Amino acid sequence: MTDTYSAAVRTNGLWKVFQQEAEEVTAVRDVSLTIDRGEFTALAGPSGSGKTTLLNVIGGLTRPTRGDVLVAGREVSAMSNQELARLRLDEVGFIFQAYNLLPVLTAMENAEFPMLLQGIGAEERQARVRALFERTGMSGLEDRRPGKLSGGQQQRVAVIRAVASKPALVLADEPTANLDSASSEALLDMMSELNRDLGVTFVFATHDGHVMERSRRVVQMVDGSIDADEIRT
Picture 1 (tube, rainbow, N blue to C red):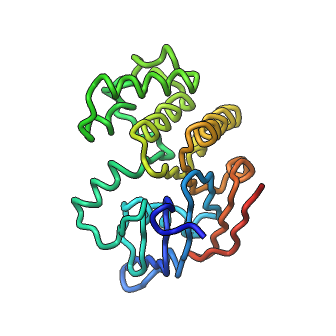
Picture 2: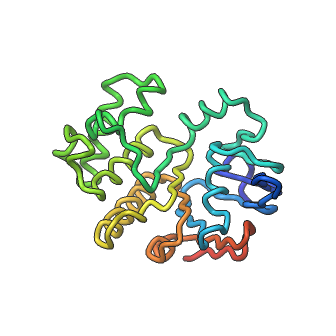
């Protein structure tokens, strides 16, 4: 059994309830889940199943209603807003469906940005990013702005940005949703290689069958609860 401090994520009795006008909506219902470092895991389910809300609670973007969340051994639910911001910067990389690149920055500057906020020096930032651009087939595109990149290329930059700061885990919300099938497969190849070769921990919220097929663990969610948890060899 993985101990609390070596797990990338651990939740215990996690609930998230939203107030919508006079009605309470339960998005996450009593979820207890451990994700070890180095996993390549999909939180799967249809819209409304709670997978994106669970991802957001794990990443400190949304506070739980009750229950515990630990990221890299640190209790998230008790943190102040300032502590949460620092946790997100240091321990969690995010990949969003809409890429969320800054249009005025080059691809390289976008990838460097979290490390700039961390206070990492320019030489170290550039060395990390250039190595990842080379590893992922993006060499030569460092100076292009997002508007001059394809959707698949923009999402690759988003992955590099998420990985370069060496977080405890990377959370990806529907990362293939805006990509064609060829770009999706190329992106999954890239993330699989980063997971295998560098030990990057990936957790996806997805309803994409291709992402589920490539994941080594699939946690199925229904109505905010875990319905099945399959580990594949």
